Length: 349
Image 1: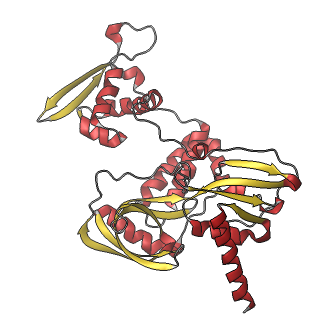
Image 2: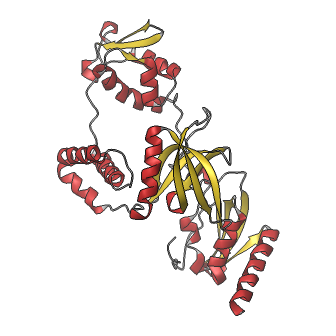
């Protein structure tokens, strides 16, 4: 978290809902998702004759039924001005219980997509970030892909050099390597994990699902047997990790979290907390998703946000000090006041 920032004296009232701060997951059967998928699926099918429906579904992250629906759209696809017999032809047949796909009459639409400048720069930055992740998969392949993209992008690739992404490095390298090993072998992990909200170390078995980077920090996402749910674990909070000689068994209903909107994504079920902030405390609105913001006299701000952990609210309120206070709910405000008095008494003692 960065240090407090003083905001301008005048500021317009802003309102923002939690829904706007979280990127909604795009439905696989929506028209936009289907068109995007088909533009990539068609070149793949042309370069992989007799591809299996199950393999295509797994590759594109959709159900086999959705793949068949996509292919039914291809039957009526082609360039403007073509006749019915000139459209793309799709054949599907069953071979030993597997659906086999054959696509023909599609040479004119099977060319790979060309990246725009902004897309190429974003991809180069993402690959450079991936290459810096400790315990990452084949680094040589990533570096070769970066070289090819830079050569293809030309001068546009220089824009990517202006973007620097800092990722947890040596401090978590050993933990990341163990996690990567367990992911590759599909084995269970045993973690000794520090929970800052309770200031305690917990022991738990986790079936790993993926290693992700969020805001420059490495996280393990997996099925936690202690919580019986999908959880994210910051690698710099892992006190000890061991790969067990036990196969990971992630439940079929377990799904990775959509992190497009950030790590913290408020829910309507979370508690609604009201802060009153002085001009020096208005930085809270820039760092946390909120529901409403109301201007008060003297450039103060009344902010309402969702929080699922009261301990987090207490820590934020104590950090704000005289630049902000919790005004609702009343019992939470009393908790913050009591915590502040305890801290003051300890300091004076």
